[in-house]
Image (cartoon, rainbow, N blue to C red; front, side, top):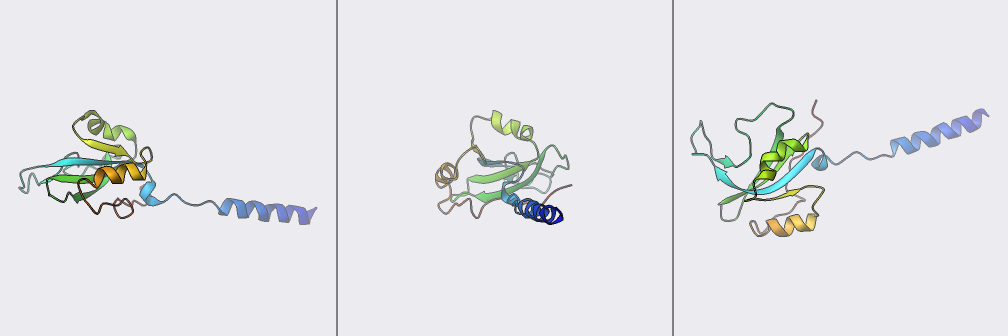
Length: 135
């Protein structure tokens, strides 16, 4: 009886410990988009990609992180925005003039083929924001 219990507990422990963590590049809600640059370039209004919050927001329900790459011609920004909930992206979803993809809903091939029109060496393997757990 005791031996069976011990074997069962060891088997259960092995199964529970075998679960893998989520890759930090895939945690939270993420959108990848092609946007234009905005701002005058002054200290009060720096040149930055559209939809990237400035000054950075401390709102946990807003955009909490982002990554930016300039297009080959410098006219556009390829961005990844990260938020805890999808509602933070609503202004971006309402703008029909930009190209965007929700990570996890669009395939890697779809995203890369669309963004390679703007940056020849674009790869999702090297682009993105890595966040560790945020309190």
